[in-house]
Amino acid sequence: MDTSATAIEWAMAELIKHPSAMKKLQEELEKAVGLNRAVDESDVEGLVYLDMVIKETMRLHPVAPLLLPHEATEDCTVNGFHIPYKSRVIVNVWSIGRDPKVWTTHDLEEFVPERFLGSSLDVKGRDFQLLPFGTGHRGCPGMQLGFTVVRFVVAQLMHCFDWDLPGGISPSELDMTEEFGLTTPRAKHLVVTPRYRLSE
Ligand code: HEM
Image (cartoon, rainbow, N blue to C red):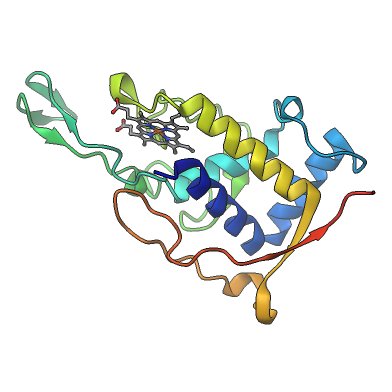
């Protein structure tokens, strides 16, 4: 599964669709790195807006929308629901990412990285509102690598380039249809033209 590539493509698409968020991220990167060199892996730690962009991307576009099927190892009760031993449990993180009881500060369907401002929510599996890597014994063992790669690549692409959509399409018209399955990639790959923005 191309999990990291799918997450990077969604982050790029959301940033291109929301030029003000892209500008804020570019400003954060410029402040941290300047325009005379490319982003290094060590620059990415502590970039608050970048972190919020990636979390918001993973809230709206979890790469594995139903995680992987889990099996109950014993009888248990969760939120009043009895789950018998050996039941197959499917966790719909796509839907949890749009739960109005959880996400109260901004429009649920909108890409708003600022909803994470001042919040300690992270993607490591402790906060059940946001589980793009699953949680527990069968959570994603590649989480650290995946999260680092996604942050680093998005930071480099946004720092080095501005992005133009083809054929005069305006950002708001960008098609965000998902292809539903075990993973949810974009239905149509993102096609964009880079414009180099660093000093030589
Ligand atoms: C952004 C990148 C990635 C995302 C969003 C992601 C997401 C996930 C999710 C949601 C699961 C299922 C967890 C569950 O059901 O509780 C999973 C499982 C898994 N992931 Fe990842 N993953 C990513 C990157 C990676 C990488 C880089 C590797 C390997 C180097 C990896 C290896 C695995 C493996 C082996 C499992 C199965 C674990 C098991 O069943 O015990 N993932 N991943």
